[in-house]
Length: 355
Image (cartoon, rainbow, N blue to C red; front, side, top):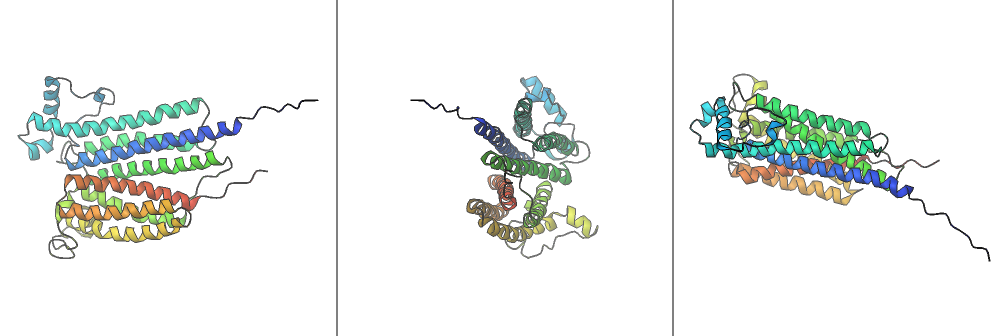
């Protein structure tokens, strides 16, 4: 009786799935680190810690001061800037150490994000494991990360000579670029997850509905960054009225409408609290469309903006309680991630058929 031999099973399909899936998990891990950095950045801003380190030393700045003499040197540098001479004069060394801590952690996280992206990126590239068409996208994300570090120093530099705080315009660029990077990481990871499931899967496209919703959300995030940068959250501690009236009576129009629109804390506070509901309307429409293809993504969007609105109101009514304000920024970042998820689901296209 003749035996029939069977060829060994091919491992090619599992190998094909392994690389995109591994890269996707790596990118989601980096996105989580970026989220942590956004949260710590919010704490840094709320505790007025951002100007405590007056130099940018990429290598030497990795370690904090390790002796009392080193702490005194850092404190003396801080004493030379307007924030100390005009706002914090008389601050003790112990108080300086507290604000130094948050800025140091923020910068350390930035370095960690860079290493967490660069080393695996190099590893996957050397092994030629990056799927075709994704090398340029990963390179762009890496470049945006490097740019983020430069933007961070550009922001800090605005508060070291003539101002007692950083420019709210530069703060907005810093925050929005971080959120854009996080959304890009989530989007790319989801493309790679789809590729791991089906080698014929194509990258998702940006739909008109998703793009319109993102534009509305962008305006709200921009206003929020300006409110944070100008400490405009303290302009009123009541809701829905502002200091007894719907529209704030304290807006300074003396330098024109454009100046008020970009600098006046009362007007920006008003716009941020009410544009939020324009954003909610856009998010509801998008989430209902997402529900047809992914109920979980739709629920995530609804939950994120619902919690975010409640946290925003609570932050106002508690005169910017630190814990609530930090949660407000954290959930804002989560909302961005859920919108990226939902937008990706709307833009997914059927895979190409094999010949």
